[in-house]
Length: 107
Image (cartoon, rainbow, N blue to C red; front, side):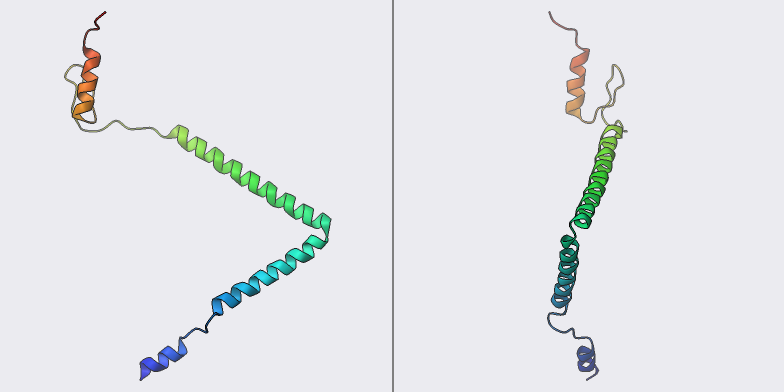
C-alpha cells in the first residue's frame, strides 16, 4: 500500500522535460529576435562571441602544441640488456635489431 502512495507522489508528469526545453527555446528565440532587430547590438554580440571563441581556440591549440613537445619517453626499467654497451631494449626483437649496430660494417 505504501509503495502505491510513493509511486503517486514521485511520478513525473508526461512531457515535463520536453515542455521545459520548449519554453527555454522560445525564450532564447524571443531574446535573439529582439537583439537581431537592433543591428548594431547584434553585430557587437556576434563579434564578441567570435573573439571569445577565437581566443579560447588559440589558447587550447597552444596548450596542445606545448603538451606534444614536452612529452618525454622514459626508457624501459627492465628488459633484455645489450652485453656490449648495456642498453636496455624493450623486447628480444629490439635487442637483436640493436646488436646489428655493433657489427662491423661491410663495404
